[in-house]
Image 1 (cartoon, rainbow, N blue to C red):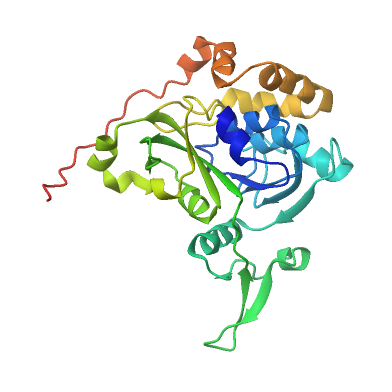
Image 2 (cartoon, rainbow, N blue to C red):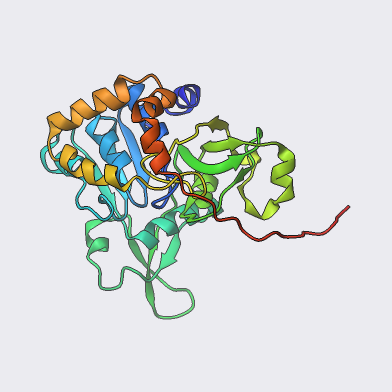
Length: 298
């Protein structure tokens, strides 16, 4: 993780750490904080705790997003301090609907000049965000909203497994992982397991990200805690509740960052500090799927 972040995440770049509730790579965000990156544009459909932490650490100057919040709990207090008070640094924001962000990633992945959508009808977002435009349909008298493509300098995608060449398999709540990877200029894949290519080839329909677009593969078990990875560990709901109290105060937030990010060398040290009891509590148990026979091929 250290090497991948050091090589691909530089000051001033745009970075997307995606994952919709699941697959949120906190380990990558913490390494970006640890390496002292600055002036990043953070991109994400649903900024939650990881971007709250990164913004509290001063790594970002801009946030491109749709919904933001601590899911099921409330506000992101560090993001609010940055927007409202410039603490620890001013933060520019560029807001879209969920589908607006999906449209931007899709256009970026498909190399389209824009993406049309209806979800801004009756909304004030086009008035607040000049990136959202209205254009005349070439097929009717209708005017329709469009959003521009987005192409992050770096996308960081977490998944269950990949082979050493970066052919990456995901299952569960997929979010916009695939589109973000194809839209990005550089892709870092972080996985719970690196497996032999024969395992990937045996189940090709799970391969959503091909190795040909991947620049780095990082083996980082439990890299998403307190988020979750289906089949590997559950969401740590207790942490999301605890973060609400921590993040309301800038000093408490800085103390947490010092203890859990700066004072730990890497994710392995973080997990050791977290403790076996917590990791055991997050064990998801077993829920095997049925078997498939893809048939022989030549």
